[in-house]
Length: 196
Image 1 (cartoon, rainbow, N blue to C red):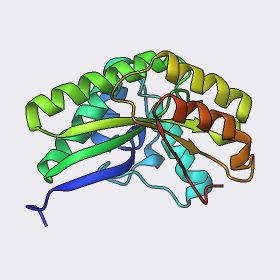
Image 2: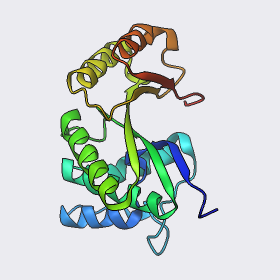
Image 3: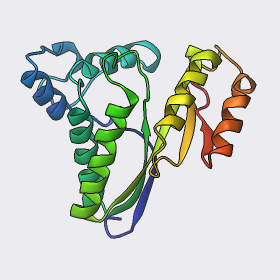
Image 4: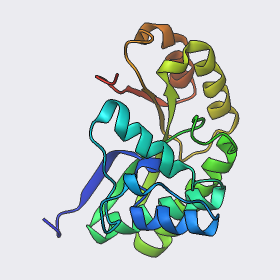
């Protein structure tokens, strides 16, 4: 398995933070992450269910993510890990806006991720591209603003957009205009399914 070239086509970059990296970044910022989100030796995150507890753990970890440099570190660490597994290509799902990251702009997030992609390709030969997300549960109006940010900060490494979030909140067709804008800009479109 190790020798087979691989592609990672769906990974949320902010979901790749390891416990070790989360603790390191939190310590640098003098943030105490709750013990309950880790197993006993703090080598794994723990949660009881996806719909509530997982998101609480996820939001707790994001307290340690406060800068473009943090996104660089997260992205570089993950691409290094993938390269060690003989992954040659990766598409990173990236949040332009996120309630857990209120002080970071899309440009700051994008800069950190792109810089890490460039360095990882140089160091390990792995190629990565970016798919920003549109949060379905924020609604089409916020989706419009998100799409405007994505198109305003257009980068050649951004290859698509992805609709994520609670499927009960808004039907996919409510975002049809956004998909049209994405296609007109040469971006592919994909949707998460079954999230609630």
